Structures are given as structure tokens and as C-alpha cells.
Amino acid sequence: MNIWAYIDGFNLYNGALRNTPYKWLDLQAFSESLRPTDQVSSVKFFSAKVNARPNDVAQPLRQMLYWRALRTIPTIEIIEGHFLTKQTRLPDVADTDRITALQRAGTKTAGMVPRMAHVYRSEEKGTDVNLAVHLVHDAHLSRFDGAIVVSNDSDLAGAIRIVRREIGKPVFVFHPSNANPSFQLRAAASRFHPVASHHLMNSQFPPMLTDTRGTFSKPATW
Image 1: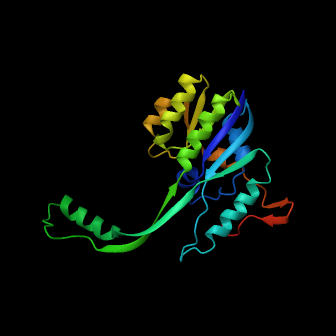
Image 2 (image 1 turned 90 degrees about the vertical axis):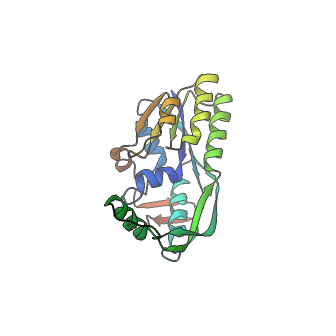
Image 3 (image 1 turned 120 degrees about the vertical axis):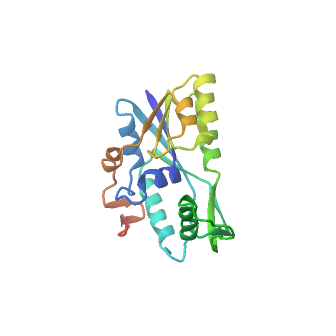
């Protein structure tokens, strides 16, 4: 089959790539490893530009190097959403856990409240909507025989059902989170599988790449 892949970038990162050595991921090779008997002719990557944080000022640079690597593959398209960052107050985790433990032990905790801290909270906006729109639009135009969706976002279930039931094309969902796979996506998908570590390990870019701007390398801290 002619397969198009739709990859939820931050869902993949947080579910399968964070704290692993596999972040330098060739998404074309990765998508082909998910459906090795089919032809993956297009990969759409849905993400957003991150902002520097005081504890990680190089984060945007690493991301741009990765996007530069993705753009060396002509079949990969990056579709951008955006981040909304705001300050908010949230309870301290250690205090919350301490109070919960006391309650479970039968200790009275009336009047005990966790300390609050000012934090930056970033919310990714647009990725799920962009992915759903592209998936349904491309299916309606019959650009593919079947689709891969890499995500564990249950908000995509409606779009996947439309492509399967109304347009009649299979959608193979690969969820990057083994801990809590979405039952809504499982019900909507033609097939529902986890992203396995070998899919990531065997789909890495080489450490050094070359494009029209010159030679560049994988970030040293990855």
C-alpha cells in the first residue's frame, strides 16, 4: 500500500524518546519500520518551536538541529503549531506526596496544605487539530491507500473514525506510551500497536549530516 505517516512530535518525544539515546530519529526510516511491507511515500511531522528555559538554554538549538536533519529527507514535511507559555501557581510535589502518605497512614491532616510555587507552564497548541485536518483532507483527496498515525492523543479518535468509516481507508495507530494507551484510539484504529524500542534504535540518523548549508552533527548532549 501507499502509506502516509502522521506523527505527533511531542507525543512521540514524551512517550517514547525522552530520557533515551534515540532522539536523533530519522522519521522516514522510523515510519518504514512500522509498516515494512508497504511504501511510505510521505511523512508529516507535527510539532512546535520550543522556548529556552533557564535550566536548558540550548533546547531550541537542539530542536533546530533536529529539524534541519529532518529537512534533509525530501519526503518529510514539518507542520508547525505553537506554544503558549504562562506563569501559574502549582502545589509542591514533595509536600503533596507527604500529605497523601499521612492520610493513607490514618494521620489527621486537617489544615495541612502543600506549599505553592510559581512555575512556567507551556501548552502546545494546534498540533492535534493540524494532524486531524491533514489526515482527513489527504484521505478525502485519496492521496494514500492507508495511513500511519503515531500518537496517544485520544482527541484524534474522531478524525481516525471518519477516515476509516466514511472514506474507507485503514488507519494504523502506533502509540508511544506503553503505560496508558488510549482506549479511544484503540477503538477507532484499524490496528493499534505500541512503538517498540527497536523501531527507534534501528531508525537513527548518522551522527554527521550534510545539507545545502554544509555539514552538521547530532547535538553532543543527546
